[in-house]
Image 1 (cartoon, one colour):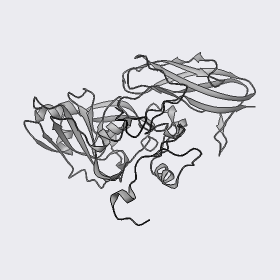
Image 2 (cartoon, one colour; image 1 turned 120 degrees about the vertical axis):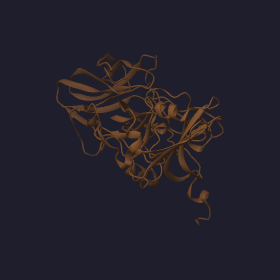
Image 3 (cartoon, one colour; image 1 turned 90 degrees about the vertical axis):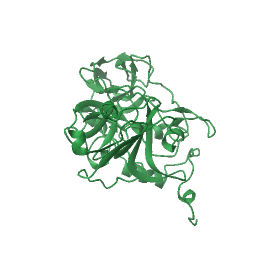
Image 4 (cartoon, one colour; image 1 turned 135 degrees about the vertical axis):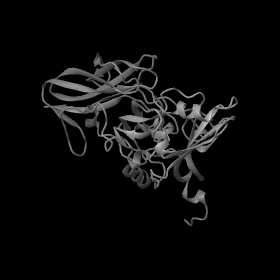
Length: 366
């Protein structure tokens, strides 16, 4: 096919046909954007190289010494701030669990065609920076401002639309929203937004704009592609959908025993087996984690640690399973204080967003 326009190289969103395998394009995305190895759930704070990564377009060239953040639009005093000026403001550190909105997409049937995540698109980091409220207070928010629009330096094409990556948040912003310049005590790595990114605790990853260089306050709702077209819960192409926002509850199990190389089926020995993992929700603390060794037919409660001083970080959980010989399917599900519980059946939508279907881990005990 001859390429003569942006639409020729950037096609509309689609759902895979029945029995259609993963495409070469999806494999290329999977090679660029990696998930968290599930054994790394053992770390309270995810090492940067193990934290999940999603880059929509390219990692841009960025020089921290010359980087500027512009703050404009519906403000009384437009600002141009370098990294040194941001670092001179009072800093805070928040431990935040971040999850891609498309986590679980490849487990849906039929499969929305995009980045083919299973369950590993998550990580927890200590993010250091300046509260967004501090910078907006310095700029002075006009009375008519209703949204803040954030522009990243990554540029590309999506569904025929050439664009910078842009997202908005309603005003006033939550107190914990950060303009972050450090991850786990060091400068942001390139793939995580060096030298400056937005961190929005409790929201899926699409809101955490990387390579942030502009904030514009508006008196009308932002209708850019990543806000009004992408990241919507839709059941059909003409469905306007509801926006993707906060993270639905999820529990993940550190796979026990040891794996087969190809199938990843786990092997354990008969007797007591310690099961542990992490659970989180963007709506509030996780109050219950249940574990099943028979693919959800019966459940037992695990012990769940509290959030402690980190209200936006994942929570550890653990229990002991007395494993009998044979084949088993381990399943875990989380419930949060706001009344949300992980589903046992897939919550399907055309974008493959927010699929917090329970994890299932096949185990052979022998």
